[in-house]
Length: 282
Image (cartoon, rainbow, N blue to C red; front, top):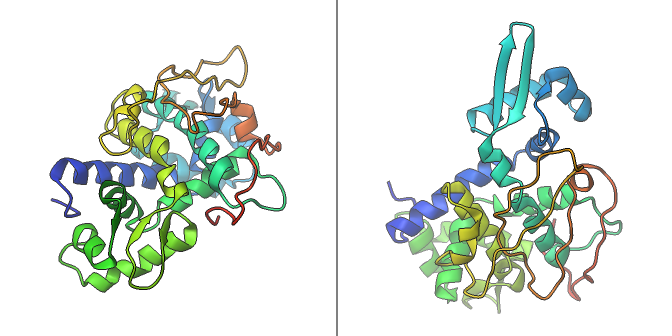
């Protein structure tokens, strides 16, 4: 069943990305996946890595991630159970540095530099606003559109004025811009800069190689070339997949993100200056 008035293939693409974001955005999910990015762990070992979670909080999170196909529970014996991330989760990890790169460039700068993991969590929160993905897709396709035209495509059959709460939220978040009341809406530089992230999420949610992110029919870049991005916590751990899409921006040297740096509360480097008017709100 179509969710939007977009063509069927595009509608399915938006639905898959929306579902993918819903799986990984809930609080602590990304941190749990990062904690499991090495060898499978017993529950007590995992709990020690995410010690801020109480026992009653970790169990349901693990069940949700298992149901989503991102974590595998292996029962060796009745007293020996381990948890590890699945192949699907492993292919998700190279997308996280792309999110950090976007956040470093566009997110509103706080007084104190934030750890990379918090950059990821803040960015994902912006993308999971209601109807956010569909609005971003439509504006990327059309360039600009009125509120009524957006409503007809994003929420067909609904009262067209219902488009304004999510649209205003995206404007407040800094992903969409307009020249004023009654004027058309368009993607901001930050919204357009999400191309590598959304292209990668689209490829991942469709079960495709992340190399195909640069060829996305809407968010892809004809000049994008896949580039390996090292993201290792140590030389003894499993290397990151080599199918990461091209990073953004292309004129910057990509950071060699480390899983330990992303997962820890260490302060990451902040190579890009704050935008003069501030970036998207956190």
